[in-house]
Length: 290
Image 1 (cartoon, helix red, strand yellow):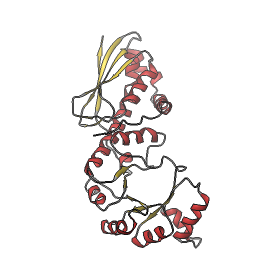
Image 2 (spheres, rainbow, N blue to C red):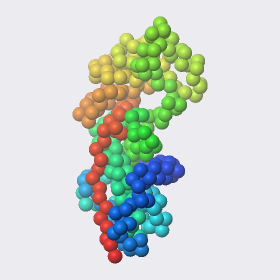
Image 3 (cartoon, one colour):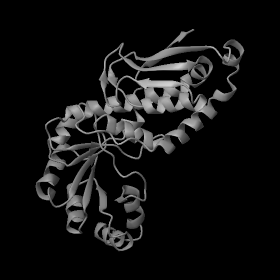
Image 4 (cartoon, rainbow, N blue to C red):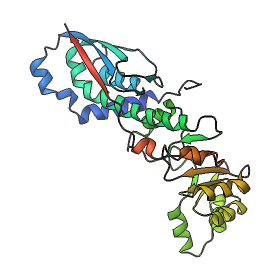
């Protein structure tokens, strides 16, 4: 369960994402609804969970409906971050039926996608319960939806990595390949990054072997990303680097091995699959025409 409120996404980003999705779906040019539903017909509806999971995205769903009808009322019946079972009512809405039907797919798409991310995140967080480690996301997000998907990770009890490339120095394998082609060592690369980056930013570097971790630590790296490193190797790095640098494990993390990785003593476990491979949570809208 969450211990603190979730910091919500910027409402301006929500509206921008929702507007783009409504336009993509032709919600303002819904020929089926225009043909069959009188513009003044009113009614209500409920959004229902069809599977167990963690809810996320109700404010985004509300934005989808209200961007087509500002007078529509939307009442969230559970908070984002709540664990629900099949059949639980998530929200109730009332107003003109035509905009409800035109916004339905976009609203549910956001709600299903974000709830799926929150659900998968919660499963990983619970798998490492009791251990001093953070589950974090990566930049492997849907283009244009990063702020919303990272909100979903927080709703699931996880944490966020750097938001974009300007938020921190993370020297990856391809950066190292480019540097090594010029004859530079790990120590050279870290020193060069230190000189060029703002003093407020930490220097993190990806390493794949214990020897590289020792070299990076000796060169003054603030954080080590242990990429696809075997458990025994991670444990060895923790033995000499814990407390001297932030230790992040990444690559090949699953629900089956995440606890074993956490038990090595790393500080952070980053998982791209939280956002790029989460299964959508099944939810539906059931309308009540009048």
